Amino acid sequence: MPPRPLRWLFLDLNSYFASVEQQLQPELRGRPVIVAPVGSDTTVAIAASYEAKRYGINTGTPVWEAKQKCPDLLITPARHERYVEFHDAIIAEVWNHVPVTHVCSIDEVACRLLDNENSAEAARALALRIKAGIRDNIGACLTSSIGIAPNRLLAKLASDMRKPDGLIVLTADQLPHRLFALELRDIAGIGAKMERQLARAGINDIAGLCARRPRDAGSAWGGTNGDRLWYLLHGVDLPEKPTQSRTIGHSHVLAPRARGLEPTRLVARRLALKAASRLRRKSCLARLLVLHGKFEGDKSSWRTAVKLSPTQDSFAILAALDRLWPRLEATGRARPGGFRLRMVGVTLAGIEPIAAEQGSLFAHLDPDSAPARETRSLALSRAMDRLNARFGRNAVTLGPLAGGRADQVGTKIAFGRIPELAEFHE
Image (cartoon, rainbow, N blue to C red; front, side, top):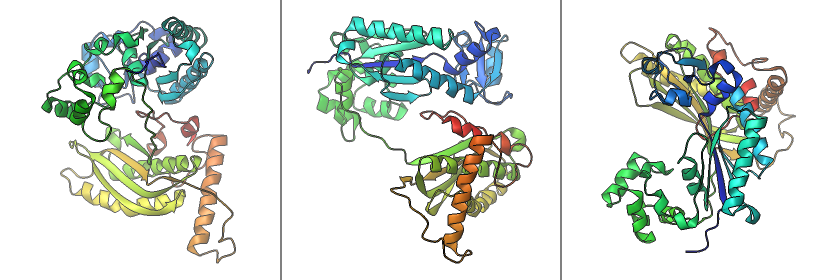
């Protein structure tokens, strides 16, 4: 084995959404609390305080079930913009102590340690300073669990070992045997399917995986570089594979009273406009529009798509959505009970950056020609972005917000993606 010094500090904020609400609302502190998307028993908890978790309530627990488990439960609506504001403040606080290498999610951050920070004593002292800085400068309710280890995977596993407010240091001499008490599914990337695949190869726990030779462990994992996990579990800090986002999209769970055809269409239009605005902020073009959804009583997803000429224009994207809509309408009307869509989503795919941009070649064409119209509509789309950023959400829109539901499509924090604050004004 090569030398395996402590190289990574991983910070995981405890019950983040619920903790922010307890910080903002002192009357919630020390009480069982869940954060829910809307005030309805048909939704699920998107976060639970540790006081609620003691009753067996977790993220994903239906609200009606959570109320049965804890009659004294308090429910507060989600305020995603505030969670992003606190996130930004926490990241800035961490930067006061150590450079932030990766923002992994809304409540997770990874920092690579320098040579003068990677002794067990120095790393532990650094972690305690970060915890104290967040407590003193952001809020006492914002506790975190920190893991320190030779690589990022192990630091993440260490942060999960003691919650809430934990601090675990995994040194090379503790590896891999310190991990044997964990489940295979505790490792990021191992789900039910991979667990079954490993079981077919005779691997039922972390000890069994580590007991193999690297090549044998890689064969059981399958795919290229399948032996990476073996080396990571033994503390080797391997270079990370680059990733690139290829889609931009939004989805929305519809309230029971708004699952008919027209309310759903208005929501889909708003989701398309939000995706188009994000596309322009990233200076990217899209080549594909995907419309997808889930009907009431159906666990499977329905989807359809249409190719786009590379574009970031809201008008072109809405026109493509209008071409797709009759397909969803026909499917919904043919179902027993008529059109009842539970969730609708719009995704822009085939994303590519704009290599360079210059003035329009079509400025002097016939104003009614297609290239000239697209040039004008893209300029208008960008002007709308600037107006909404300055004057607030819905300062200017394309089409109606009729019925009041479409204008309630707010920005949400999705797994693995933190919205920019600008998205809350779209």
